[in-house]
Length: 222
Image 1: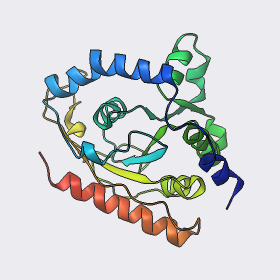
Image 2 (image 1 turned 120 degrees about the vertical axis):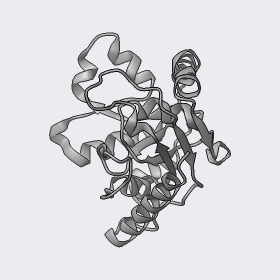
Image 3 (image 1 turned 30 degrees about the vertical axis):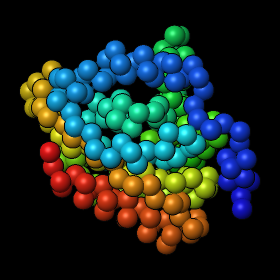
Image 4 (image 1 turned 90 degrees about the horizontal axis):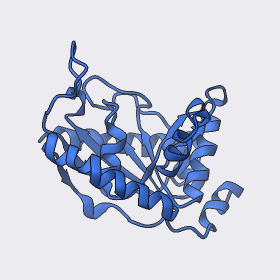
């Protein structure tokens, strides 16, 4: 067992810091939840599958800048995401986004920096959000999943939770800078155990399974 894995398994935090929970609920109930359930007429399925304590990795498809707050709202707990380091040089903003779960990653450090930052967030009791393809796709589906989420899960010894966001690719349409009021559906799958090892074959198998589940949930539509 690696030193990194031991550090997460032996850490005392069961969940996010209290201040982050307060900020999350303030932002959720004042802005995000009314937007999701009112403006976007959102539906959420599978909330009972989300562990409300202990670290885990939430893997998801990605099609819109709206995805991070909508996902955090749907799973009913704060979710930490990586953010470029430059944002953490802005007074007030850096404190706010840090409390809400963002963690800084140097662009020059690449994947290693992202993995270290995610491990630190998991050690602090956070759920860490990872978009499986690493970038947005026009159709909201996962075509080329990356191994990063599985690698982090293997190193930390934490489970993965696949989630599908349906409809977010249509929020911003060509020629318009205003978000359209289109129906959204979020489907939450069942928790998956971490890979049995950090070998590429094991990581690939878990990654492909996550992509299969997410695309399958997405295919259910509204």
